[in-house]
Length: 144
Image 1 (cartoon, rainbow, N blue to C red):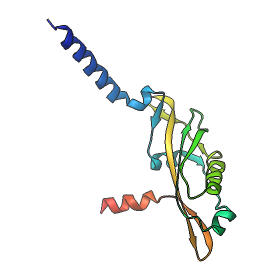
Image 2 (image 1 turned 120 degrees about the vertical axis):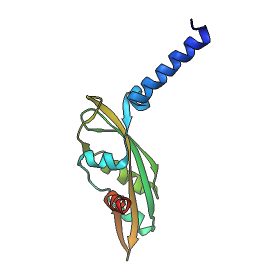
Image 3 (image 1 turned 90 degrees about the vertical axis):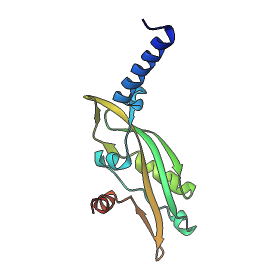
Image 4 (image 1 turned 60 degrees about the horizontal axis):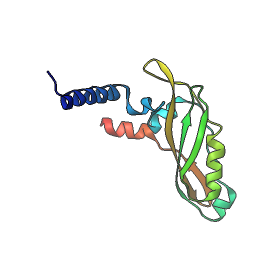
């Protein structure tokens, strides 16, 4: 017969295994997915504009946004985690709010998603350029 400590330990172990099976994020009401997977779900994905003021100020660098995608594929709660300046930050929020995604299914149910998107703002010969990560080139490199 189990003593009280063994019973508690067994229950905690089973609870931990169940959490691993369904994933910690799904227990919170959403699933965290990687950027490559998130981009593959995109139906509409306008690129942020490079603001004129940012170009004039020579603001360049990496920008990262975090947001939720609801069960219908709409973007919610956009947070800019990193941006070269405040004008780019506004451009990011404006563009990301227009993105639309296919609904994400987890364990047979449509669920909310938490994800991040990265953009690179650079100046080449005085022209502003906004790029996304190139996952396909990374995949080819790994397969060699």
